[in-house]
Length: 86
Image (tube, rainbow, N blue to C red; front, side):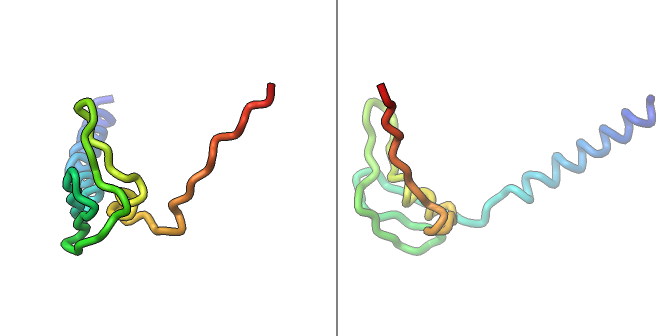
């Protein structure tokens, strides 16, 4: 039992150091409220709508946020809600 607890503690220690390195992205995106442009990985990009703040919440166009997070354009899809039948 003690051996299993020691092994578990060792694995948790390894994971504690490995996950942040594996999960840390190398990209950076900056959206500025009121501007129709943003930077992703140091490159200036344009949007068709500006980020804005309403009632203490910041809204950013989802398409451009996804692109800044390196989601491929062909993987960004939208679907309309299905109408309910009476």
